[in-house]
Length: 431
Image (cartoon, rainbow, N blue to C red; front, top):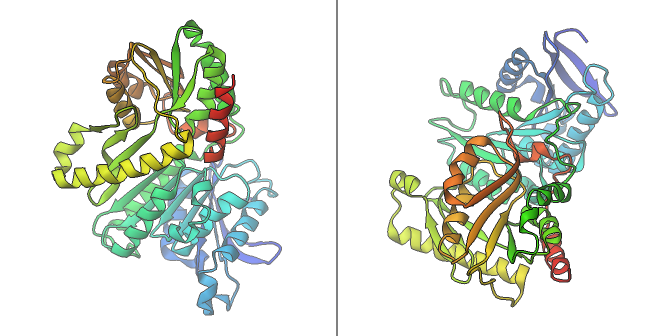
């Protein structure tokens, strides 16, 4: 295919689309999803697509609805219909010589954001998702199963949609961020706001939309594979009265393999983030489980946000309730283990910023443990350096630089379920 934009049709329905090919070899393909029948003609989406093409990405803008279908507003909100048609576009791309080897990302606007999230679950592998002023909440039934790193971009003046996005953000378990564009409304018509959207989208796709043919030595087959390799770096603790504590849910399969290899008991260490007022995605601290659950505050963030004591108390109480619910689900009536005088090995499937791990290590410092070890398959070097002063030892198999996301270092990074957590804890108890 020649460089530039050209009209194409997506089979089998003949959906109208416009495909943009960069001058140089494409880094990946971004497929645009818009809930209206004229998504390919949206000036805002065209601006994003052109910027992506100039940056080195192929871009496919398509109409998810056929001519006349958008007149029935129910179709615009029919997420099942829109997502199935988006899957058709992704499947078509895999049959085109110029596109078949490219990693795919979705850029969703309005109800197209929900369609993109849903399509990422039911269709071909998607490497990244960006939502602009979207309604991800309309995909609530699949949000917990989304694995593609997801960026939610919302206008700062789009108050109702901010609430929808924050609710959806809390339901996502993948790599995720929410970014508020100041002074922007729902359509990002204000001067400079679309430029902000474009910058955010390009940065996200550059981080996560990679050539799937790239082979790297620091990629693990799955969490169990990572756990077996991590265990080999911890053999000095075999039969040494150590206890392995997993950060659920993703850390449990990794920790299971470590505990099995070290002949050590396995348990979970539950943590609940305390969000900032009006910005729940920003952690001001955490409630950490244990024989005596502790509240650990991030002093730097607290100084900036300055939440009231009553707010911290109320949010802490609410997170304690959720922590108690999860504790019963995972442990039943079994009490938290006594860590006094023991070597405690904290295991996760990977660490990005280290906020949760830092809270955990601070809490464990008051537990009476003799030695605290933090172990993970992968983390950025700056995060490891930050956490070194909080633990007696850190074991990290891979510290790639630059670092993008934990999930990129696994070939299989499917969501760990509560049922799997309970099953692995039961199996570990019988080893």
